[in-house]
Structure formats: structure tokens, C-alpha cells
Image 1 (spheres, helix red, strand yellow):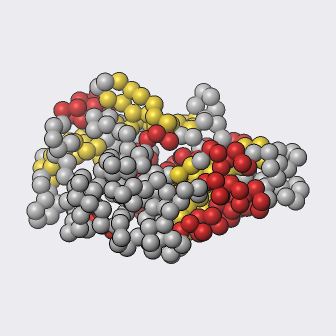
Image 2: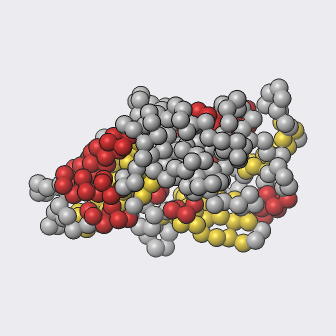
Image 3: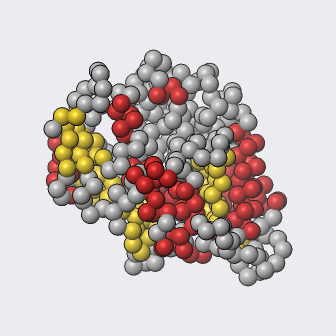
Length: 355
């Protein structure tokens, strides 16, 4: 069947995948114009309406058994690619063991969108750069080699880390910031086999190929994500999203912070990631190492923030994001120290001692 979304739109076929093998065969059969898997479609349909993507077909994968959320034998977590964001955020296992992930998901979009958006689709969101969405302006992400209109333009929301002369856009996802902090792995399949991609290697920095957001190949399908055990962080985690209005707004800066605090009051382990500052979620294990063995105090938090933001550069109007990000990191770590606030407003992990 052909589906059209407005005047000037190139028609695309629509098909429901009957099995995973069928889906992989369809993806492998595409030529110049790829076939696009669709689950919730909350970003994809907007891109199609604006003619920013023109797949030859839509492959509905909602009937595939890819929506389960379960624990793993190792004590970790498996998230199905088509499981909805809302189901993930409120799943008892996620709330109990991965409250950082739950908080990040619930900071995103609106309840209606979270009810539709899928976990796999969340990873594949396109940037919200104004110039990317404006087809009247050059954009290397839309048309490689055409130039980056954001450079020297309106840069309030743009990258301060990892940018290149070809692109200064940021990745918009909240969920992905928590997944980066929690060492997630993305599992994909194709007719060539399966592979597991560390989350840090899934999204790309722009370099000289900003049109490539991720390392996912056109014939590959995300099947699920896995996270290692993270119960040790459950009592001391926080997701902080700085934005211009309370709801339905993308972040200026976001921070995912998780701490394991030992009986002596010192930090045993730490996870720290930034969102909306780069082409991908930004994490530095060196920054986390600065926290380990320290008391959870302002000096340790300032040191970690300094390392996490090392090399940050403004793009004009977004110069404010550098000090804002530093303060946000410190604030998120302070909130994590005070104890995780769960989805019902309760606080876990009240420290038995003063930092």
C-alpha cells in the first residue's frame, strides 16, 4: 500500500513485518532509498512530513516480539526495542534498580508522546537544530557538503563539546543520557548476523560526516538494549534537566548522575553524563574517576565538572552553556548525594552522616 503525507511528498509503501526474519529481509532489500522501520513514529512522521527523510517504505515492526522488559541472568536489565517509553519508566524493575533511567524518560516530551515513543526509536531521534528543519537553509546533515548554517548563526541550543566545522548540532534525547551513564549496550540484527554495540560507540560525533548520527547500518534493526546491574546506584541518583519551560521542552543542558556511597561516606563508584551539549550524550570516565574515593562535597563535584567539560568551546550565543553545565553537574551530584527522588516523590538513600 502507498501512503502519502501531503503535497509534494514522495509516496512510500507500508508493510507489517510478520517475523524478525521478514523484517531483516525487507531492510536488506532496499536500494538507494532505504526502508524505514516504524514503531511509535513520533519523530519519523514529522521528518517525513517536512521531507527531511524520504524512505521508499515503512516497515511496521510492532507485531514483532521486541517489547519485553525483563531482568537478565547477570542481574541486569533487558529493554525491548519496541517497548514504549512510558512502560519502561514505570516498570517495577526499572523504578527499583534503575531510577536514573526512569527519571530521564519522564523528563522528556509529554505523557502522550511517551505512551507512543519506543525505546529503539528514542535512540534514533534526529537533532532539533533549527537549520536542520529549515529546508531553505544549507545543512550538512540534510545535504552533505552544503555547509552548516548554524556556524555563525543562532546557536543558543547548539554544541559546546565534540563539534566540528561541519556541524554543531546536539542530540536531543533525555533517555540516552541516562543510558550512556549506565553503560548500556545496543543489540542489533541483520541478515549478516547480530552484534552488540557499546552505547558509547552507538552515536557518532559529527566529524566530516555529520549526516551519520549513529553506527547503525541501513540493513540493521535494533532488537533490544541491555544494562549491567546498577542497584548500587539506586539510592543516590539524579537526572537534572535545565530547560526554558517546565514541560515539553528540549534541554539546554541535562545531567545524569549516579553515586555509590560507602559506609565511610566516601564515593565508591560514580556515573556522570551530559546531554544537549554535543552530537551524542557526553561522558568522561576520567571525570568519574575524580569522584571515586572522595567525600561527596563541593570540591570533588567541581573537579569532576571541570574534567567533564574540558575542551568545551562556545559557538557565540551558547557561551552561557559552559558555566551553566558546570553548575548543573555540581547540582545534580548534590541531589544524588541527598538521595534519589522516586516517581512517587519519596526520597531514598538519606545519608547517615554529613558530607
